Structures are given as structure tokens and as C-alpha cells.
Length: 221
Image (cartoon, rainbow, N blue to C red; front, side):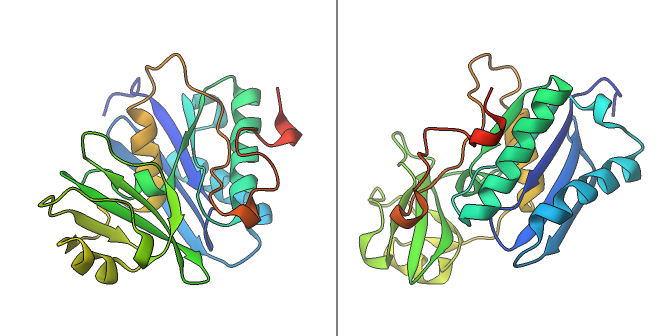
């Protein structure tokens, strides 16, 4: 892989994990995922440092930061989004936000129903691959987004085995681990000049105290 290929550091703490991946061009140099219900704030930066050291690169070598923006755990999302914005500001590189719903569909062709656990019997769901797609939404199995007839979608994520029979779909596993997928999605957006700063994607009312339109205040620029 040419050493001048873009080097992207992707990471995510939107669920009960701390995950990171280092992507150069189309090659993953290193990645790691540690399951944890709490402690991401203390663990994230040491994990990223370890990943860079393992790969023989430094912060200054990075061309972009990719970060998972949720939906998911309120505190976890803010940890990673704040870190991404701070790193991007300090390194003078772009920070690219990627939703977990989109990331877990990356590399899967056709219509895809992507779902995440929203707790309390709820789901975060978004449909990809149709002409219009759908917006991410908080729903239940009874209030799933409309899926075109005969779409035969791939169903990926939380409760996929329950969702698939409701839409004549097929249960499918994500092609890439979450942090790698986030980095790969970000790589497709590097050439855009209108990228907004990453901001948390909140879908549950209880999680929406800070506006979803605003970035974390700590690192506002």
C-alpha cells in the first residue's frame, strides 16, 4: 500500500465498547475492540495511542479522524465526538462523523434494514439502498419504517431475526467491525468540502437534552 494513501483513525464508544481502527487507503493497519459498560472516557486515548504505536505512525501522520456519532449511549457518544473534534482541531485535519446505522451496512449491497438496540424494547432503525431511503428513527417492531414491497432486504443488527420475517428479509452479518466500517465510510467522504463537524445523533427524547444540531460545547470552535 502506498505510504501516501490517506491515513484515517476511526473510533467509536456509542455502545458498551471502546473500538478503534487505523485505515491506510484500503488496508487496515491495526484495530482493536474492548467491551466495557463504562470507563470509555479513561480508556479511549490510551487505546488510540497504542494503535498508532503498534502501526509505527504518529498523530502527525493522520489525514483524517472518523468517529461514530450514534445513535446509542448518550455519554459514550459525547465522549468520542468530543475527542474527535479536539483531535481534529489540534492536528488540523478533518473530523468525519458516521452513524452506527450506516457503518454496519457498509459493504452490503441492495436494500438493507439496519437496527440497533435502543433499550426498553425499542430499536433504532434506518433503511438503506432504496431510491429514497429513510431517516434514522426510534421505533418498535410494530412501527418499523416502510420497506418497499419485494425489496428482499438484508437485515443487520439488533433483533434482525425478528425483523427479517416482517419484511421478507434475510438475516445478514455486518461485513466489517464497527470501527473499521466507520473509517471506511469516512474514506469515501474525504473529498467533500462541505463536511459538517461531527455532532451526536440522538433519537430518543430522553437523550435529547442537548440539541442534536449542536456539537459538544467543550470543543466548540
